[in-house]
Image (cartoon, rainbow, N blue to C red; front, side, top):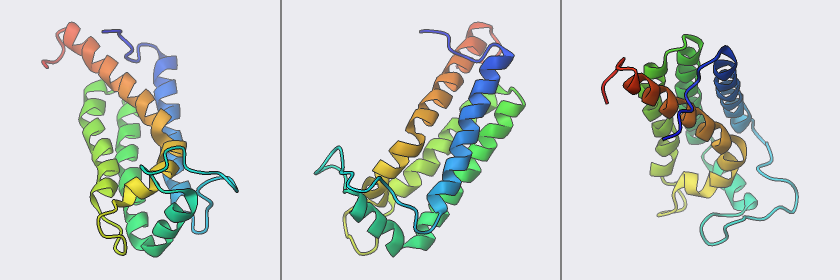
Length: 157
């Protein structure tokens, strides 16, 4: 296992930068009328995810739920940011589950008019474009921090 936990002030600043970007992305996700893709852009995974037009229609059809889910993502990200500011790696690990759950909450809820279609599966392009690299970077920092703490005997796995 490669130790990628934040070790220096710069590492923690980078983690904070990524968490802040994710926090701000939740604000962008809530903006009414926001385009979900560039004009003419198509789904990179047709048959697995809908195209931008369908995604936008689903977001607009149940705006209240969409905003509720983005608020959940904001809240979980804010807690993560607070843990980063405290340089509290084990709290980051605990909060990683909440951050993941905030994303999964959208996956689990169906668009009202679409029957078996999952809301986030329909909007996954939006979230991937905005947040996936940020989540991966935060996850690397959390995993590395916990691994380092386990090796140092500060916590038990």
